[in-house]
Image 1 (cartoon, rainbow over the protein chains, first blue to last red):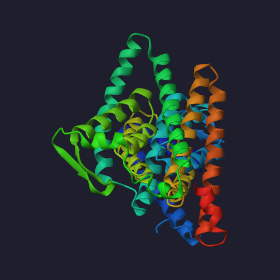
Image 2 (cartoon, each protein chain N blue to C red):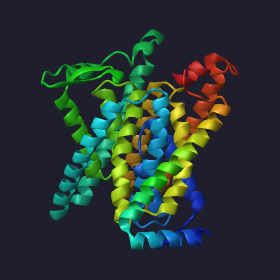
Image 3 (cartoon, helix red, strand yellow):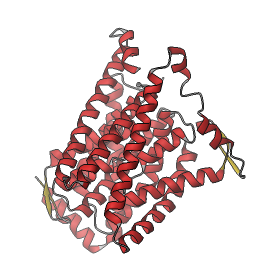
Length: 52
Length: 340
């Protein structure tokens, strides 16, 4: 599976570099926010909110 | 092992995840990107240098979104100040790069950059530890007000009469000369471009010691500035084909979790304690650069990586102890003792 994703990413990069760059920025935002929100839920479940 | 098609390298996925996690904690806690830890570590783990820088910048961008969001929830971000520092910082970065190109032309780039880097890391690190030492000698009453009282330097900087003026009510900075903000923003960007790092380790002390921001506000505001500069950095490095998406994503998963933990820890641990550990981190980074200068790059990389792991462990320990103390599970006196 990783190989096919790698091939796909390499193809996008060689086809259109600007599209690849935008994909990088978009993916980093989406994955960062998703994992961050998931962690926030876990921390709040554990009673670690931070806000006073 | 993960195969990275653009860099044509194989790296250990678990190692990437752990690097991301440790540096994520430090990033959320200190308001730094952590490029000075990640870039040499990635290089050791098989990334060619240019890919190490590009992949690092991309993951820092994702991580800074998470950390800024959490700090914003904790009301630790001055968006107006962060936006100005981030945008003007970009101009400073280009000035720094031009200086590097000039030094490269005269064949002095390597030693000059490393010497300035070492001096800066040790100077700021020692200053912050000394600052904590003075704080530790105060009585309890003085300790409560230490972050509220403005130092002579802050009063002088804020008292400079060169119009026009700008205010940052969230940071409690009233009518400061706009030229001071321009100079400090461009200067931190210049250092960042000159040394090839994110600049958090310069910007956080500037916000604390020149503008008088409380430590947690400086951390949150700096993370927002990092978000702005690194969004552009991630784009241009990806455009040049120097970002490995898979590698950056694996690191980001670890970093996003770590950044949340590091950010939330700032709400439980006293600002002066953050300054102490920030100073220690800078000293360790200085020692790593010194080792690099002495032609021991692998040892330098492992020193940084090991230090990041130990410091992250300390932050997690302090967070757990503080949360337990606040919840009344342990003796509150222990908590007070720990937070001093």
